[in-house]
Image (cartoon, rainbow, N blue to C red; front, side, top):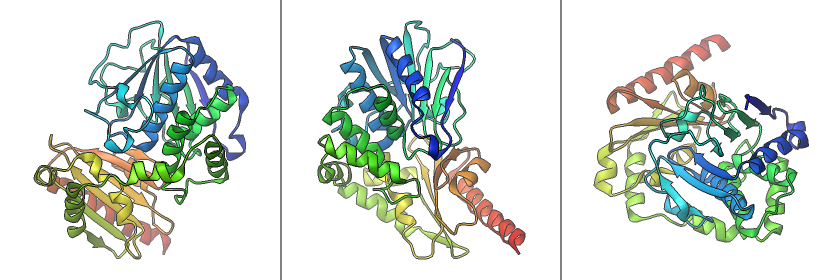
Length: 347
């Protein structure tokens, strides 16, 4: 199979039937599916895999869900087939009758599973909505204008005339709702609401989904957030920066999944246009999440890419080497220098 790029770029081209049908035909062709999402899985990634896994089952496929995380966050364990998740660190991508499917991964490294190479003749499908997607698979169905990967799958299911059951609709709605921040982020568009309306007509209960996703806070979660809030530093009156150390997770008993929503919470501070949340995990790995809004001198995605990361215009991230203090200093210094550089250009 030679590399084929299916790219949907313009809002006016949201429902290009030819492109979407090509992707659905590839899925129909293979009997065995192995599905991946990115590590540190979020609502869109979990919802995407759950929806496609269930579709595959309904089509009579043999489906496997692999991921680099040790387990799924409790908030998403209500999703169909979430109990089928298998933690995996490496894999031999050498089964000729298997289609390897990457969902919500801007590059294959984000899956966190060793063994894949874009240079190998691997039957692979990449479905994603990140504008900086590297088009690493043989088949790439990517639209940087889509609100979520769940929206991409929704279009694909509709184009292929595949039945969307209530449980599939719940999975798709979970990804749509979480990646649009409850339909308030800038990636929300008219098609997002039309999709939501259709999913509700299929039996989705928004109140139930919201309760399952959001009402899972624990005392450990609150203790962790309190530490992050105590450390908030305001730079140049428009930037908010905070961090969590590995000891914070150990001492509070919180999990990494308990950080979900923290960057967005920093963005609720008055006058803040750009937020940075830095995490040191118990294995000493360090990453940072970036959020930006209208009025920021630069977008989150642009800033992340300058630091070797990537993501969306308003939400992005990056990983770092070095000690926690070194990373904090590096990000703060780069943030202020980038801001002053932009200020000089705009004068």
